[in-house]
Image (cartoon, rainbow, N blue to C red):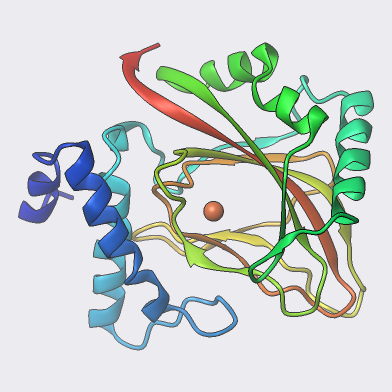
Amino acid sequence: MELPFFNFIDTLDDDERSILKTALSQKIDRYFDSNNHLQINSEDERNQFDQLAMSLKRLSVHSNIIPADGILYQGFPAWLNEELLQKVITEGEGRRLEPLEQIDHFLGCGGLIADELSVSAELLMFIQNLVPVVVSPTGIASYIYYDQEGAGIRPHVDTDVFSLNLILMLKHEVSSSYMPSATIVFPAFMEPQSFRLKVGEVLIMYGGNVIHTRSRIAPGEIVHLLTIGFNLNMKSA
Ligand SMILES: [Fe+2]
């Protein structure tokens, strides 16, 4: 779909894209209810939301390689063997006991294991094989804890600190009487896509350019995640 606005975006430099992204990001909230569900009341609003989601995607200089749903990978990768998974889970459990920053979830920076993983050559090679432009590690790894009823994260796109976001599920306890929470993406011109990862399962998304959320945590539910950020360079791989 080509519109004059999208052609205009193509003429912007990095700084201008960044400013526009910040401005457009602030419009995301109005299309969601307090439970982080998309709330569209009319055809016009649907159209506006799709243009917003499409613009946020188009603001990436690599928008042509981003899949329609913004997802790069989902699965159980070979670089994450049982031993490494256990080490990350244990480190994540330990970090939870330390004082953490609370937004609408608890956030801990990485740790020795997570930081090492975030720059591991094997992981980088794995992602590089999925992407046609050069990928670089940011070294930014964060443990995220959703372990209070109603926790979650408001729908957003990630800041320019990283464009690819890897999510690894470390722990998911849920009471059988409630629908478990999920990572949900809201691509333009598509139904929202929900991802309920199993422990050890990995999701990699173009988080800087696709709107995403964690739906609200159900009573008794506990979710521990590790996220790792990567960037895309201008050069072809
Ligand atoms: Fe995010």
